[in-house]
Structures are given as structure tokens and as C-alpha cells.
Length: 151
Length: 113
Image 1 (cartoon, helix red, strand yellow):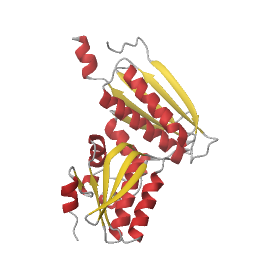
Image 2 (tube, one colour):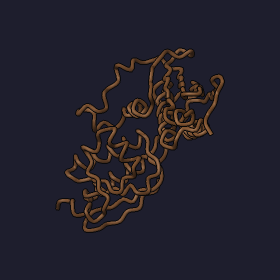
Image 3 (spheres, rainbow over the protein chains, first blue to last red):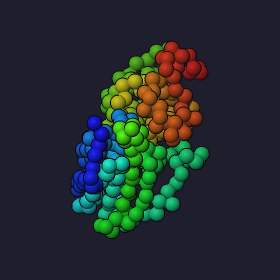
Image 4 (cartoon, one colour):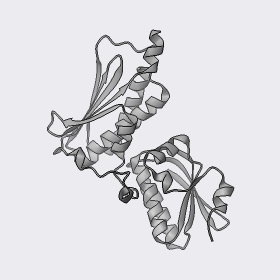
């Protein structure tokens, strides 16, 4: 079976900025990815990318202020999954992030989450979020699954 | 996460099991390492075979443990990395920092006295 979608199907979740929700959102991302017939490697990569993105939104965007929300939206297209993670913070400049692969940063205790997202997802963009904070928009494309099925 | 400790040939082996992730007992590892170093146990081997999940925060804990041990003149090495953990360490270039082994015997031999 292959994933078919005549139009983008949407799942949207809004959570308070609490780390207890990371498991929930990672599992949801994994289940959506499986439903779309991605392989297990992609399921793991999308799940971890979602976890890292939501963690950033909670910890850095919303500064673990439980009164601030994180919106996670899954757009399920026929050829790709797009995930938007929105925080309600003050916004930030991704160009200002330290490079975790620079020699002087290799032994720093943090700063690797976005690196994983960039490696594991096909496209990653930072945009202003509708709530005034930051939106991290990431895309995972289907390649061989759909190509093989259509042959 | 659970941490079981044993000593072989003067090396403290910590058998880790469970998840090393943000918000979940990652402080345990940090405290265990600190306690070992403070009591003079500075040759430490982390057995990662039972680690089921790790995120960037977990990687940070490994890095913190390495820094704690190294700055005190000790050695911290890794054993039995799963394929996923190996990939995360490769992405972060930390395989150039950590020594890792698939064999406990070889790992133990590698510790200098």
C-alpha cells in the first residue's frame, strides 16, 4: 500500500511549554510518518527531529513558561510531510547560532538539536510564527517509496 | 535510566540502560561520574548497549561526563554503541573525541595505567 492524499491532510496539536509533552509529540510524529508509509529509518529521524524542535520551542522560545503554548502542525501531502513547530517567544536569528561542529564548540554541553534536524530532514526553515514567535518548518520528502509504487 | 556499576582491572564500568534524553534522569549520570572522580576512580567505561534512545541533551550529558573526567586527568571511553548512537556521535563529530569499542576486553586493554 502507498500513501495517497488528494489534498494535504492536517493534524494540529497545541501544548503548554512542559517537557512532559516531548514523548507525546515524538510518538505522534512517528505514527504519522508510519501512516504515510515512510520506512522505519525515516520514522526515527522525523520523530527525533520533532522532539528536538519542540524541545527548542519549549526551552529557548518559550523559556519553559508553561503559560506559553507550542503549536505543532503536521501537513501530510502525497509526496512529503511538512511539520511546523511554533513558539510564542520573542523570535531569534538562526544565523546567530554557534556552530556545534566548530572545534571550540565540540565539548559544549548543548547546541546540537538543530544540527540533528538539519541532517535528518530534507528542508528546514525558520520563519516568524503567527503567534509572534518563531516557526521552525521542516519537510521530509518521499522518494523511492512513491517512485517504486508508481512503476 | 538505570546505572549499574562494576569494576574490572581497575576500570569502573557503568552499564547504562534506558533513555538519556532531556528531562529524564540525565542528571543521574552527571552525578555518578562526579562521585567516581571525587573518589579517585578516573578510568571509566560507559557501556551503552542498553541505551535505547538518546537526544541532543543526552549527547550533552556524555560530553559533560567526558569533560569532568578529562579535566581531572582521567579517561572516559564508550563501549557497545548502537548503530543509532554511533550515527548521532558521527553527526556531531564526537567520534573524533570519544574512543569507542565493540569489545569489553579491548576497551579495558586500552586504558593506560
